[in-house]
Image 1 (cartoon, rainbow, N blue to C red):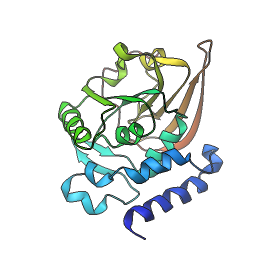
Image 2 (cartoon, rainbow, N blue to C red):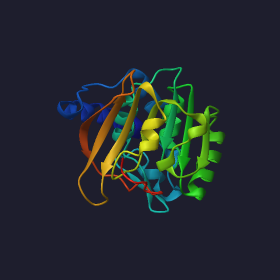
Image 3 (spheres, helix red, strand yellow):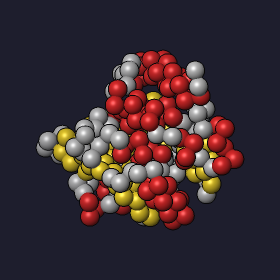
Length: 221
């Protein structure tokens, strides 16, 4: 069993172990297929390549990380996205989550507030043939209104509250997956659902630890 196969087996086992929190004892086969297909070593710094298939977050510079593969897989699965969907990702980082989503949905709009990371991710995704991903530098708290509404939104950094702009940009029937909490404090992975009438329902899924979502910090709604 090679490193990638071991990682995939670890993800399957961890999903099973956390099912009592997440409600999911197994992930969608399309999510697991994407995790198997995307080369994580292409998204980590050269000095970290040997750690690419360790089930842990890794630093990518600028105070940011590439998320733990189990968390990437779980957050992707929680979106319940379909092949025809358009998804917004806030916190592009290295581009790894965007590359996973690109194999599952029709189009991904991904943004990062760090211009250097956005530029690197854009070029990396282009080299890997992810033609259905568009990356820009911007403040994730404001979302990407020109392409809204989105079928699903995933935020890969922890916010102190759910940004109102992201709720506004979510389609009725859509899902937002976001870590909520303060840096170096308790955080929870939260799933937000918007019903056909625009009403919001949210539930906490799992304790997590993410770097903070950097941005404009609008007033809490």
